[in-house]
Image 1 (tube, rainbow, N blue to C red):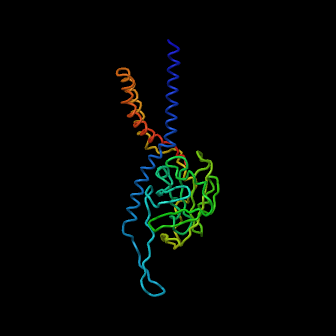
Image 2 (image 1 turned 180 degrees about the vertical axis):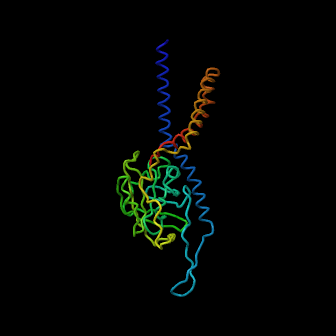
Image 3 (image 1 turned 90 degrees about the horizontal axis):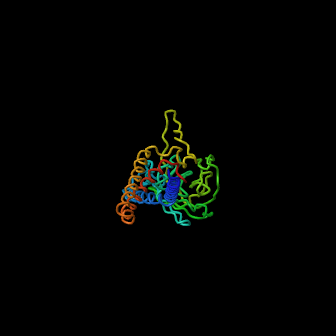
Length: 304
């Protein structure tokens, strides 16, 4: 038994594992932005199509002149993962489609609206969460906002402007920042510090104009208003501890395919020479590895 060959083999294995780990870290920091960019292109296109569609209106009677007046109806509910708004923060160069929901898959597409809060532009405390380090990192520079900075939001009900009022750091359990409010607010949340989910950074802004109408609350048989569904929680913008189990089989299959491609490339290098074999095999391996990373990342908690 050649001890030197064994040690060399172990060394090469460790080096290969280290390279793969570094490649996955690079994918998390930069590669995830490619997936987010694709999602954003689709979301923007879908949202613009909705804006260009005929607007539903409702007719009410004016108490002053007695003539009918036309007012904009509240926007209908939006399915989770679909665009509900476009948010622009000129100070930090943000212009993103906002999706409905703050779960793992929703936040990988862009900033997410807490479903149990009003939509931006409506009365009350509208709340939006966003990644700070991965998947496009829309809120990477959120800490740079100062009082008076503008935040502009376009929804199906129109365009609304908010002025930043305060910034604070809270614990993930301090859900009171998402509580209903008599003021018309926009609350942005992200993880703090960067690359950690130990705290939440919260930016609060106030609406500078009259709010849009909100959907009427449904009445239950006793005549009282229906209680809110699930109260919003800052912990909602963390990934679930289990990730997405549906990605387990695709991750295994793509991982095996990546290993197979690399093995074939190595075997061909023995017959054709390294330069020719690697020129053919490495591009294929990189593409397969990228898809493997995409599926493997779905199994892990998201970094916000």
